Length: 257
Image 1 (spheres, rainbow, N blue to C red):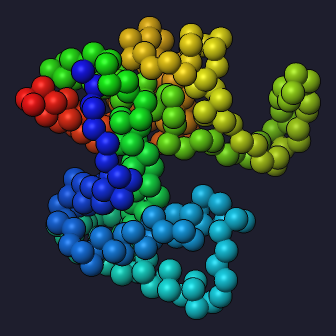
Image 2 (image 1 turned 90 degrees about the horizontal axis):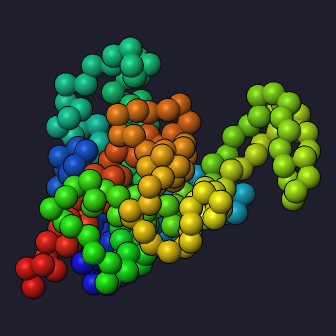
């Protein structure tokens, strides 16, 4: 059966902070690191909130901007001193970034992903019906259940891009032409609820024949762990590992009770 358990969002966010640092960097998160991550990722007006909606997130003073920059630098130093980065040698694949530059970038990516992974975990409780049968011994079926929860509620609601050439788009049933340089947003949520693609789109059904081929929750059509299209979520495989591991553990726990 599906997980019949409710956790507070604070509990989920704390778990995600500890999991991502241990899984990626082999760092055990203490209270100091946890407070720093929550400051950067989870509080109102956080660095994450600013990256998502810079126009709506007010940084009211130079002092506040300095505080956020100082917190990011502290977090980047923790990342830089982690075990996986001790022998860091900038290969061509990392654009010859120094260890400090890579640590700064990786820190910002972690700050961005913590809230999104929290949504992924929360989806498992909110969108998988408690009477829905899922075989926790079948990793393919568990993965499908995670994918379906992400289809119903994509953690990232839209993808923004800038048109490189003149493009015709249908807006409100009318074709309109937009010039190069126009900023456009593609709604992943609306695409995921398109009843012409997914029958009964708001009903959870992890056995959909076209789930893997047509879902867009990772900012491109389909889901294939072995590929990484240019305009796709760079953390999709990490997110899926977290979702599958957590759902499997929850289902095993329920079966044992």
